[in-house]
Image 1: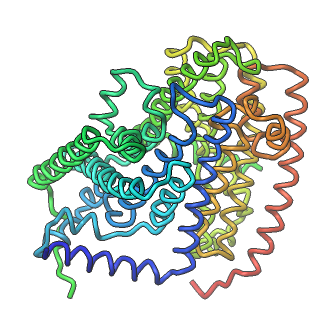
Image 2: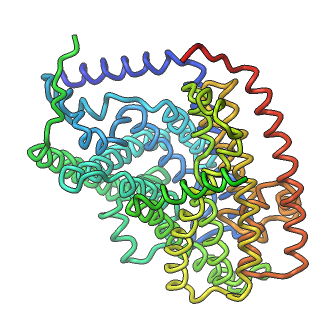
Image 3: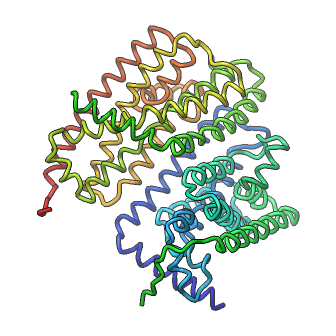
Length: 260
Length: 261
């Protein structure tokens, strides 16, 4: 409960800070929604021409794209530093978080809000509403699926960024991995063979961000829900364990200071 | 002209100073090409046709490789120009004995050369492995000329977006939207040949098709007639955008206030 109160306070401070530049914040939100819609227009053109890909149609794409965008947006909004954790580690900026009586990882990743994430998060709901598969219980599943997909995505970011404890600066590697999970997450699951699917559930868990949550939203199934919960739990445990393990190797940037 | 060539050379050397960075960035093309292969092989199989609108699976993949190489190779010059405007460093560049826009052009080209080369190398290797050798190996020169035209057009568009920082707080949304326009009207993810007729006609006239589609299509199906019309259209857009850029730059300078320094 104490951690939740702390998180709420951090998020409130982030929001107030983002709102200092109101015009920039709003232009990022609207710009990102427009950006997503324009990207999706390519899929509209594709499915108008080819109708379906191994049983996957435009409606399925709206849902998949929607849940992926909302999950991505949620992580950008609430845990924006997860995108540049390796940079924080390498520059010794973890010192600041280590000097305070709060969980280091949680505090570090929650300390930044990416304004455009609001555009992604909102667009996801619009995408779902436009899918033609909208229902109220479906919306509840959409919310749950977005939350679980966001946990997997945030965990994945923490895992790849924590490798910086052992391997040093990883900007390009992390960019490749982030692009890979987003690219594979958007594409229809029916495209991939068994080996590729194994990769998409493990090394690059894109299936937990796109096709699997989309399956749950379209039709409820305990198996799919169980898979999503299991995926979120396993990746979260992996992420926190890897970060803790890495923290033992952390070298201070001699930047310990308490800001009052 | 000599000084701009020197700036270009310095930037080329700079881009080679961190080979790991250069290679790491270029690796991104590999997952893209792999997922394209999955999508288009399933699509071609489902239509049951050997070729769709004149393009076979091999043509489509090589087309996409070239399109991605151009897209991933282009430097984000809009951000650099916008940063120069926002942090005021433009003031320090203005009093140097060179033209600010030509300076940016030279650095942009210097950055592009090896980025494009490494993307083409990795992209080409995986595409070759997936679908076999590229078609029409002998006519790469035609495509290369069109690629250079695409680079100039891309610079002009990006610099225009960067100069918007004179009046807007944040130019990132303009950059995203420009990128998506290039995706749609440039045929970055789907060749324009697969579009409905009305969208093909519209796209072919816009500058985005000259930036992506034209060089990529020439790469897989070169022909002298097509080459001439592509170069003519590129020339038209280069002239139009250069004029717009020049006007925007002059207008932008009137907003600039330099306080000491």
